[in-house]
Length: 402
Image 1: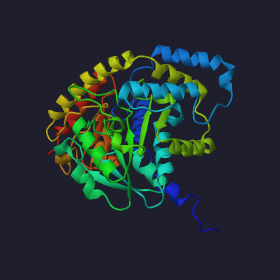
Image 2: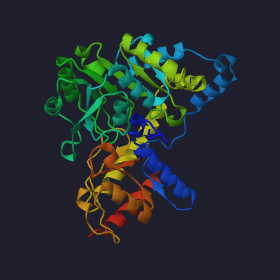
Image 3: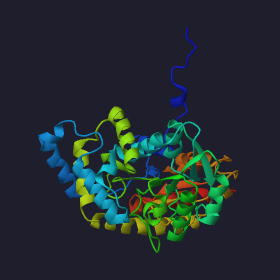
Image 4: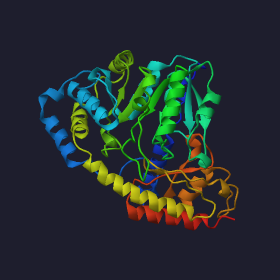
């Protein structure tokens, strides 16, 4: 009998998406009749705007879109993405510098697969979105975490980044607004980090998918625009999922230097070919339209953000900095670990999250998945009533900790 592993070591090393796992468990419990409230998935609770849906219906009727189209994306969509990027962030790119991908996750993977060789290091600020480490690992790179906490609002300094840099560092992953923390770098910090990266000849991969979801006095700053010194060593990742409530449509994109985009397009031509044409035409309507729909969603998210942060900070043992962007809160629960709660003493945020799901029927994502144990991620992209009820249940249960 063969002793070879049935699954390759490369794929065996990949962890399941923690956010999707929590969401799946919550949905399974709801299907079984339990009144679970889920704070797990980063998914707007709004439907996709009607004009976008109508564009998809029209595309489905057009025989042109029943056939293969260019692997890198429909030419009209690539041009519209370049125009939208210029409008929203001021970054100048040609349509030839755009690659349309099957959601933002494919853009993340293909960016790193195109840039990295085995042994290359990528600086990643923790807490980080769960997909980044897996994409870097699959691409043969090595993640170097730069850990932050609530004392700095989950923002990394140039000094921290420099301390983590080695001769093997090839790229910096820059994410602002951040998933999972909602942190937003002020413009001056963004510029300082970008100039530091340029000085050391590093690539910057910047994920800008939450660019339109900032609140209060916070402003989104594209590092690609703010630091022209980066030149042709910057790759922008984005997509329609969050801005236009289109998580299920699976359209993202990568913008970068022509040689990078050509190589990534070659990879995609063998991996998936073109993104669904119907979804691409829906994305074309989205990025070509105005931002009135996202303005309405942002107002609702802002209201929910303030409610959630206030309620979380009223729970003894919970500390939640105010998120400035995206639609997540990232409270510390370190003070609750090890305390007795309904016959248990959870020693990790993962164990505490399991207890909360069973006892309070509330689903949160434990922070081990984000590289900083001792926290939860809660999405406030859900209805106001469910949000209040869910955090109230959470507070009632955690108040029993002794």
